[in-house]
Length: 279
Ligand code: C2E
Ligand code: CA
Ligand code: CA
Ligand code: CA
Image 1 (cartoon, rainbow, N blue to C red):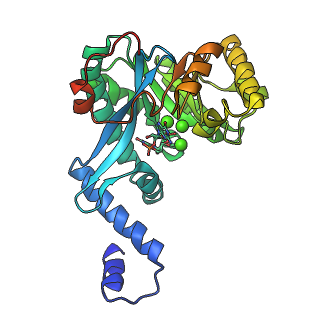
Image 2 (cartoon, rainbow, N blue to C red):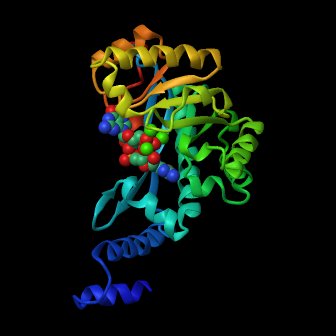
Image 3 (cartoon, protein in one colour):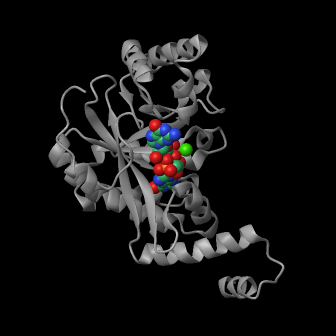
């Protein structure tokens, strides 16, 4: 099918729409990139607000494409999901993430957390928990310091298999984060039913905490509710000092964003001066 699409594109005709061609081409290139080890994990630090102390790193997939340059995950995760490459992609990123985290822990200490993104397709695929755990153990990274990030929309009442996988991961000592919290599905009333240890506040929410008193109020309530439930909030997308100061003042335990550090390859993070206790 790929060859037919290429041929149609080259001859400038055919019934295929351009975006079909693009995704077929992407899928073809992605399969090759995976075999060639061109999909890697980059890392963005997770820090304590106001002090900037590094507590963990989030692994984010990056594809070094020979012609297109660095392709962002928003462009290829969906393609990987629809073409069945997501399992291979997830495994490649998880393995690379563990390797990188082992190196980063030498600088940031043994308490460092590694968070990884897992897509819905992967989460519900048969045996995912066992495969992921085996991979992590083989890498030498402690399962207790692995945090699996999933979006809340995966965990509605109809997602028994997803919940089952999360329970297995947690039973083995791994932790779970709800990603993109605050983007629509979020219901305070259901928080206590989620098998989660961390709540990641979406960028869009973080952006409003300093512009809307009502948003700041919701954050305050969320922080106290999550404390009561034994969950830690990670505010994502922190871009300015004002947001950082407010998060500190409200007692938000963790944060991430361009203000502290952009995602970078492990070598770049290792080349930076050792993190000071204060910023
Ligand atoms: P996400 O998990 O919500 O990751 C956060 C995204 O926000 C990342 O984009 C990160 O680079 C970006 N970001 C970090 N700080 C800031 C900031 O201060 N401001 C703004 N505007 N953006 C910031 P990225 O790396 O392009 O990843 C996009 C999405 O792709 C991720 O969103 C995640 O859903 C998905 N993804 C990334 N890596 C993987 C992976 O290995 N597997 C799966 N299944 N999905 C992944
Ligand atoms: Ca994430
Ligand atoms: Ca997020
Ligand atoms: Ca996202």
